[in-house]
Image: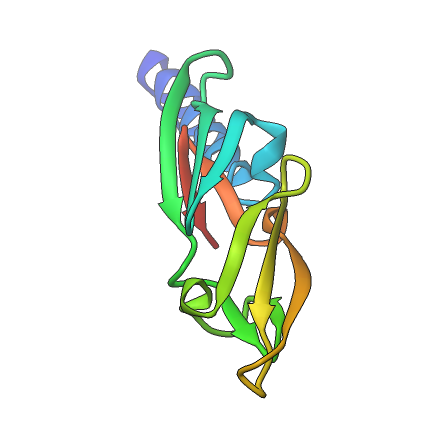
Length: 128
C-alpha cells in the first residue's frame, strides 16, 4: 500500500512539474526578465529560472526570426538586420528599427512586439 501511495504522489509531482515547465513557454518574456537590451540583432536580458528567484544572463539572435517586409518588421521571415538601421527597444518588449522599403531608397520606422514569440524557458530566451 505504501508503494502505491508513493507512486501516486510521485506521479502527481511529475505531472505538476510538466505543467509548470510548459507554462514558461507562452511568450511574454518581458514579464520574467530584466536588464533587457538590444545590440544589433541580439536581444540580451537577465531572466528568472523556473524556481522563480534564480537569475540567468541570456541572449538570442533575432535575425533568424524577424524579416523586413517593405519597411515593416514581421515574424514572417528572417534577416531583418541586413536592411534595417537604428535598431533598439521602445520599452521592454518592443523592437524598433528604421527599415528599407522595397524601392531600396526610402526607410520607414517600424515596431514589433517581441512578447509575441520570445519566451523565457528556465532562464533562457527562446523563439516560439
